[in-house]
Structures are given as structure tokens and as C-alpha cells.
Amino acid sequence: MRYDKDFIRSKFKDLFEYSLDYIYVNDLKGNFLDANKIALDALGYKEEEIESLNFLDVLADKDQLIKAMDITREIIQKGKQSERSTYKLKSKDGHVLFLETYGIPLKKNNEIYAIMGIGANITRRKLAEGRLKESEKRFRNLFQKSPFGIIILNFDGKIIESNPTTENLTGYESTDFIHKHFSQIPIIQTKDIPTLTSLFNKMVNGEHVNRIDVEIKRKDGNLIWTNLQGSVVQLENDSFIQVIIQNISKRKEAELLINKELKTLHELDNTRKKLMIRISHELKTPLLLIMGAIEYLFESRLIDINHKAADIISTVIRASSRLEKLIENLIDATRINYNKLQLNKENTNLNNLVDESIEDIKFLIKKHQINLEKKYIENIILSLDELRIKQVITNILINALKNTPPHGIIRIILEKNDLHARLSIEDTGIGLTQKETSMLFTQFGKFERDEEELDFIDIQGSGLGLFISKAIIDLHGGQIWAESEGRNKGARFIITLPLEDQ
Image 1 (tube, one colour):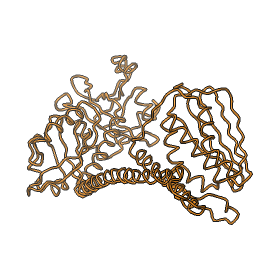
Image 2 (cartoon, helix red, strand yellow):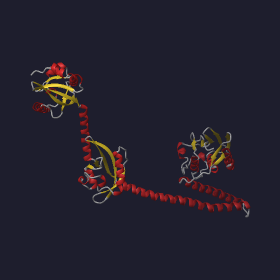
Image 3 (cartoon, one colour):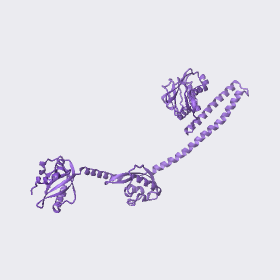
Image 4 (cartoon, rainbow, N blue to C red):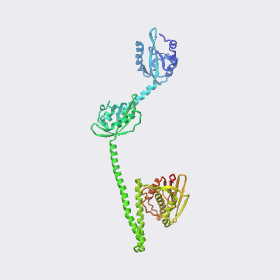
């Protein structure tokens, strides 16, 4: 029987013209008789070419021909197709597309002479399924060969599968876990169930959870530390919880050992702190008695003292003063190291503090034959610990005196802007190298200079003065730093203190 295109197209006019699906007609031998524009465009053929094509010409896989013949036979025998069929097709230019289709028998005189196919392009879906299968294949390979234990759970908390590494890690067979709720498997300790349940519920609800360290119980009874990391994975178009188990027993042993050592060190550190404070105070008490007794003898003239003895007593007094200063610095440094240095702040005239500091070391300025220059603006009132800031200023001034040759100059400039008061103490001394600058303000950051032309430098000191000075300025919310262009080019120490607290 001949296919009447005009009759069929008029009968199925809307279907051919407006359908978003592919419409085609083939005879019982698989020869194409007709197709709508969507089908023709997808396959890359023109309407006049359709009658020269056989179904075999568009099959990308020739093995599908048997399936097509079986479906045709089913339609002839039963008058309908029992389920949709999927074909992998190739277009005229060779690209592949997937078609999901079903056939409708065309009859004339109650006899089937052709089949009308209606199909949808499912290429994107098939490609996505292919990628998913490939992904699942890779996952399966990683699952089996992973060096970490892996357990897969459904959203009810029941274990679906576990990998071989889990068996080696726990000593249990996979069958000991499968279809059991994670809270019922023997490796989980009762004390950890509430925490693990909470984390599991968060993952089910789509919340991010962090890794957790858990001690699990092996089949042989031994406890081992593990790190658990859970995440949601897609497998076979369904969602599961994946838990990765890593044995961290060695790391935990190291952590416990480190914590034990840290505790010991902390105890030793506290002992050292107490010892330093105790020794400092124990040294200070007899030293004050010695200094007081010698000064009293020297000043009261209770005994006859010749010039040589007077020189010796003066040396003892100076040495005692230096030792007293060292003890004070050690006490301050210990307080700083343990955050025990406290301030007693009150509104203070910074200009007066600078002047008082200069007055306290006036004899040293005269002794070193130093020219002192001052430049102040109006009085600056700040909330300061008067004694501590004076200690800083004195430290910087003495440092400048020690490093400036006779007849050198020390300039003191005190100024302010909208945010800070700024004190600059500049000298014309030997200056600082880059290496020396980096050592400033560090504990015991004292450096030696061996150049012959620097014999005038007073090298005595503990190396704690600038370290303590920085800590005091930091506690006031300020900054202190040093600048120098190098050897024999002088140095400048700058202190800034905030105005907010005035």
C-alpha cells in the first residue's frame, strides 16, 4: 500500500506543524516516508531526501537494528508499543543524538502499512547520565582503593556500604555494619553517640560540619584515635552521607606528648618567673642596706676617710647604683614577659616630664660635655603613668649620651598633631647599622662595637632598657622606633603617644 503524504499530513496537521517532538513515518521495512521539520533539522536532511533514507542509515549503532525490528513486530502483532524505546542516532554530518520514541500504527483497510514515530531529544540527559556513570565508576575505584576508611550511609543513618580499608582499620567485616544504624555499630563508644548524631543531622539538613577526632573501638578491644570527615555525595541519582575515616593514632600520641611537655614547660616557666622575682627582691634588700650604710658613712664623716678611700667608696656607690638599676630592670622585664606590668595613669604635663628627666641626668650631660637643644610647643597634657614615661625618656636620653662623642649635640623636639604627641630625641653620635637597628627593643638586645674610634662609648648595661621602654609605650597605646642613616650619622628615637585619653 502506498503512503499518502497529503492525507496523513492533513490528518495529523497540528502534530506535524506545531509539535516540539520529532515526528517521522517509516514503512514496515524501515524506510522513511515522511518527517517533520524539527526531525529533519536535527538529522541535517532536507525534505526531498527523506524518502531515500532507511532507518539503518541514521542508527549510530547498527546493533540497534534488531531492537527496531522487534518493536516493529510488536506493533504489528499487538497494535501498539508496550514501552518507549531509546535510539542512538547519527546526523548527516556525523554528530550523535539520542531519541526516546514510541510508535503509532498507521492502518488502511484495517491493515498496518506504516508506523508513525513520536520522539523527544534526550541527548543532554543521556550525556549527563554518561558523565554520572563515569563519575560513579571513578568513585567506586577510589572507594575500593582508598588508603582511608570510607562508610556510606543513607539519610536514615543506616550503613549501606564500607570499603576494605575500613575492615582493616576496625577489624570488623563489612557485613558487621551493613543495614545497621551508625549508633549501633560496635566501633562507636556510647559517650560519642550524641555528638555524632548531632553532626549527622546537620549534614542531612545541608549544614557544613567540621572534622572531628573520635576514639573508636576495634574488634580486638583496642582503642584508636581517628579523624572523621562527613559530606553528602550523589550516587545513582540519590543522596548519601559519606564518612571518611583516617587513623590518627600516631598524631594523637605526638599531641599528647607535646601537651605533656608543654605543661611541664609551663610549670618550669612559672617556677622561673617566681624565682626571678624572688631572687631580684632578695638581692635588692641587702643591696639597699649596703648602699644606705656606705652613703651614710661617706656623708656623715663618722670615720676619717682619705682621698683614696673616698674614691673607693664612690666606686662602690656607683657600682651599687648600677646593680640596683639592673635588678629593677630584671623585675620589670619579668613583669612584661608575664603581662604583669601595670600602669597608674593620670593627666600629666609631658613637657614637665621631659624637663625633669633632663634635670635628673644633668650631671651626666655635663660630664660627657654634650650640648643639649630643646624645642617645645605649648604644654601637652596626656593621661600617662608619670613614673613609667619618665623612665622611658631617661632611658632614651642616657642611650643618646652613651653613643655621642664629647661636644656632640642632642636635640629634643616635642610637638603634636590632631592624633598624637610626638617626642623626638636626636643625637649626632655614632648612629646605627641596619643590623643594630633590628636588635633594638628586644630583650637583652645589646650589641658590641669594637671599632677603635668608638672608645668613648659607655658599653655597660643589661640590654633591657629599650625592651622595657617599648613595653611601656605599647601599654600606653603609642609607638617607639629608631631611625639612622648609618655609622657616624647619628640616630633619632621617636615616641608617639595618643591624645584620645587626655
